[in-house]
Image (cartoon, rainbow, N blue to C red; front, side, top):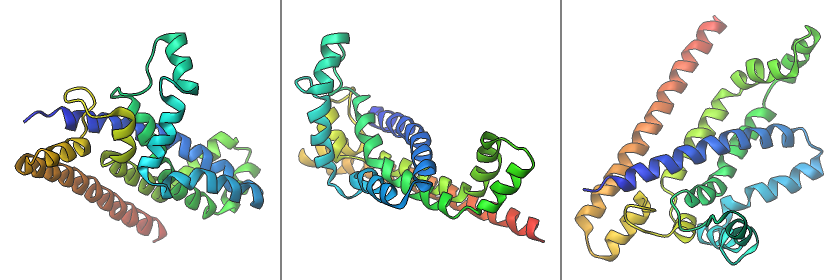
Length: 226
């Protein structure tokens, strides 16, 4: 059994999750403070990938990153780099698809933050950076954690946009999802089922870990309350 699809899926999911962790938090923090009209407009734009079919997202990315289109042709002529049909090109697709999950959960957490805590910290002379990382982020950690884990799990199972922009090449661009589909097409149900079990096992472990962390955090909060 070739383990490349697992390794490739994990690295794509991990890199994509790290990217959208910071991008999602940044967007959520500033958009949560924006005026209502601007917030609504940006919210629609940034959430679109969540409701669009993944194949549509993949098609739009191809229109931007393909070697005969806008950004892709410029990178190819300027640097000799092809932005599609590589293992790392799947990171573009995966990041776009999972970004709304991180953004929405983080924004909800920031909007639920008790701003009096920030005002109190400011009155003590604490910097905005200190307040953000040492007060706001710990307060919102449940939403941030949920968004991060959901994004990682979604990235691990991404197929539609990834298959369009990265394709399927064994040993080069194959992921668990694209491998399962190709094995199903070739009637290799036994091996396809093994990969399904691998994906299920990883997802189960990830979600179980989150539940354990949430329970531990809940006990700590209860202890502080007492």
